[in-house]
Image (cartoon, rainbow, N blue to C red; front, top):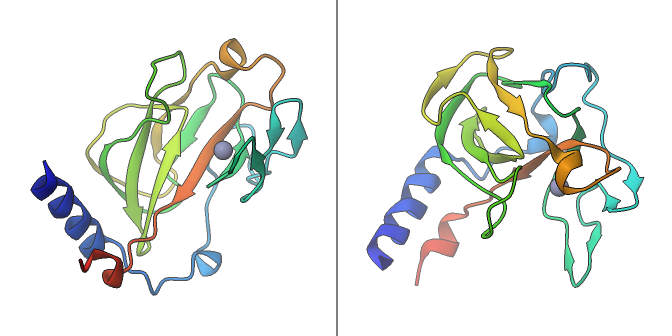
Length: 157
Ligand SMILES: [Zn+2]
C-alpha cells in the first residue's frame, strides 16, 4: 500500500510541473451557462473562494458556478488521470475526476465524468454537473476546482 502511494505521488510529480503558475494559465469555459467562469460568492452553506472557512478547516479549492445537470467542458487540453471523489460517505454528488493539462494537476468535484481516462481537447465535454441542490438545498451549485501541488522535495523522506 505504501509503495502504491509512493508510486502515485511520483507519477503525479512527473505529470505536474510545480513551476507552472496557475494564475498564468488561461482557463476556457468550464460549465455550460457560465461562459465567464463566474465564481461562487457566499451563500448559506459558505463562500466559494480559496481559503474560505469550512468550520475548522479551509476551503482548498475554488468554486465555479454550474447549474445542476449542466455540461462540464475541458477548460484546456487535458488528460484524464483517474476518478477522484470528495466524500468518504457516498451521496448524490460524490464523483469527480483528476486531470492534468498546461503543466497543472487538478481535481474537479461534483461532476459525473463520461469516462475517467483518455484525453480531451479544450471545449470538449468532460461530463455532467451532479444534482447539488439535492444534497445542499439553496446552495449556489458549482464545480469545485482544486489544484494539486506536488513538489519534488515533499517526496523525499
Ligand atoms: Zn469547493
